[in-house]
Length: 228
View 1: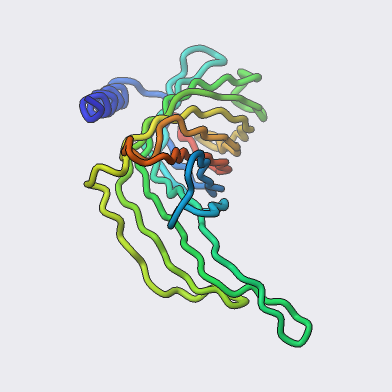
View 2: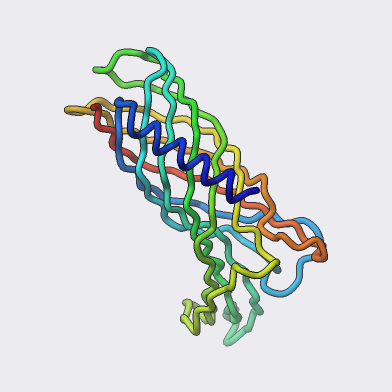
C-alpha cells in the first residue's frame, strides 16, 4: 500500500512537470539532523546527538496566482545522528574524552509538496516568503560509521545496515515549515531559506521493540530558480 502511494505521487509529480511551465531550479544546503527517541534506548541508539549533513535537489515551482506558488521537486538528503560513548581520563591535570562514536548516515530521496506565499508579488524586488506542507521520503541506504575518539576522531570501519529486514521503515512522512528571502537575478531568482522538518513516521517498523525514533531536521539552503 505504501509503495503504491509513493509511486502514484511520483507519477503525479512527473505529470505536472511535463505539462506546466513556470520555474525550475537547483537547491543545496546543510541539514542539521537529529533523531527524537522515546522508550527504551539501548545499543547503537543510546545517547543520540545532532549531526550535520548535506542535501541537494531539483526544484519545480508553479505559480498559482501573484502570491501563491506550489513548490515540489526531488531532493537527496542525508539524515541521522551520532551516538557518543565517552569517558574522561585525566593526565597531568588535563582531562581528555576517550571513547567511541557511531555516526548514523541515512540517505533519503524526498518529494516535498509545499505551498509558498510571497509577501511581495513584484518580480524585480526582494521578496520574503513563508511555506509549509508535507514531505514524502524513501530511505535508499543506511550506513553507520564507527569512529574512535581521542582528541580527534579516527575512522575504524563503516557498517552497511540491511534495510530489507522487518526492523526498519523505509518510508517517511514529514511536516515541513519555513521562511526565506528571494533575490531577483537575470532570468530568475536566488532563494535563501531555512526550514524545520518534523518527522511523523517512526524509523523503526517492529512492534516488538519498545523504542520510537523519529527524524527532526533543521535545514538551511540556497537555490536558484530559472523562470521558463
